Image 1: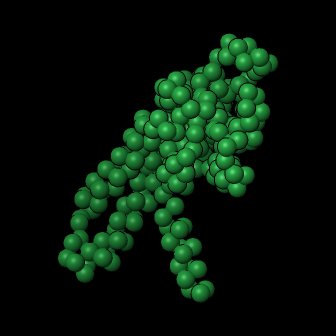
Image 2: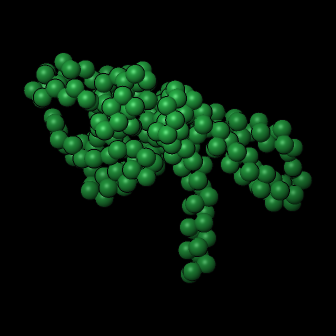
Length: 215
């Protein structure tokens, strides 16, 4: 039993490591280095690329030897690049209508910071019922909803050119699932908290260098 549990934990860690490095690494570059959103994301992608190449080297070294398929370094680099590039492009530019509250919210997806988009798309793979309820906002929206205007809201576009906050539906989901979603974002370096407003929701935000303490 212990051997099985160890194998399960080890397999889970190996499988999730590239995703953790991609997102957490990108958040690190964003927080510690005041660089453009795309350079921060590229830093995370570069670290993940190295891990994928190592994985492929190990895989083809063990499995390829028995089946007679052992791609050279160039082939492994190409395969890793294609896998990572395809995953990143999908996560950055595609959001299913089933994961957006409305067509308007779906259209706002690309206004979100690239690191935030990639973290959301990664979570959607394991939580396909995740629902984005709000992203891009302006001061007029708060007035329209009868709420006090929040001048430091990260739902506004920051100097990065992107929105740094997103709201996720929570009132129709179990407390356990909401806890896991909140934990995921916190572990990845985001701010995550339960919020009120027009309806209870999870508020997820990425630190803004314009307003370091804002949510």
